[in-house]
Image 1 (cartoon, rainbow, N blue to C red):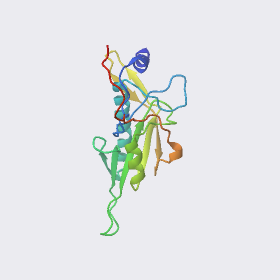
Image 2 (cartoon, rainbow, N blue to C red; image 1 turned 120 degrees about the vertical axis):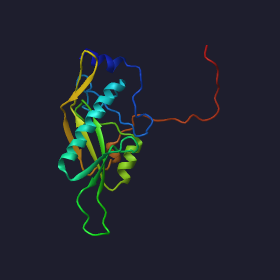
Image 3 (cartoon, rainbow, N blue to C red; image 1 turned 120 degrees about the horizontal axis):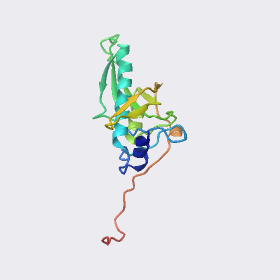
Image 4 (spheres, helix red, strand yellow; image 1 turned 90 degrees about the vertical axis):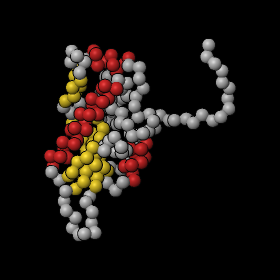
Length: 186
């Protein structure tokens, strides 16, 4: 546990997701309980372990229903999973239903999660999006510092359209205008 806390407080990299490119930010539980929402975790190994675990959990959930063709599209889309209905369309003019799934993972209670601008825009523009949160994930580091995730609970919002009143701005990107003075460092 001490190793986990050391990574939380002393890692020197910046959290992913600040660019708004669709990269998910995941987090470990906030010390002392906090608000029950995600907190930034600087160690990319922890973020990746929780993200990968959450994706496996949600993909398995939808594969087990046998109602969907389940595709991981997270590497090239602003959402994580695409579900394509296996139910045949009623008429030749109908097409199979397609659903986007945004997956979030956290060791916290999952009361809040980080979203990128692209994730919000994609969810608002597509006909049906699901928000799937895997929260309460346990992360264990072994002697070789390999991370293992387990447990947690799944919370599904279907359909999900992020409303303005549920969004909080946490970071801005500022385009610096021309001008000002520049000088070399000493």
